[in-house]
Image (cartoon, rainbow, N blue to C red):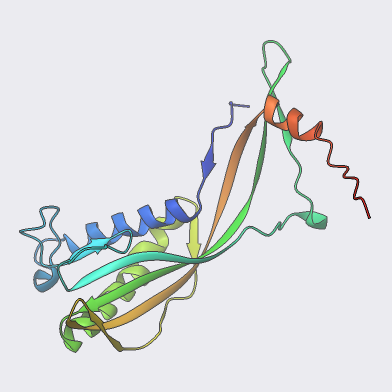
Length: 198
């Protein structure tokens, strides 16, 4: 067995995956010219962020964020075991690893200066997720079934009226994490017996 590597596909991984996929989709030549994305901000007609920008930004825009993240154990008998990794040549335990499933809500926050921009971006983004991203993401350990838009709304951002919508995508992904022997031994040897004086 190969030495396991740290592979935690949780919130940061989902942010990057959706941001990269959205930027790639909206950069497609001659498909959505009105909302064409360019890595150079001055040439881009849309902004796509992996976090909420705390400065004025170009609208229309899509902001990727995450909601609740469920790390609840999902293995048999609700137990998760550490698996030893032994060096094949020395038969010495060099690390421990574990794996499991994570459920995380991803939100694609749509903002536009007009209600039409907001609706169009919502439609395009949902179609991209359903027909293009879903099959591709499975190959990288990300799955989702539901794609739900909350509904149109408005907000004031720095004195500017913006039309908003939020697409909610409950995702599930897997992780594999490698723990050094020293860390596991330190926790195993931890004495947490506490004497409370009354």
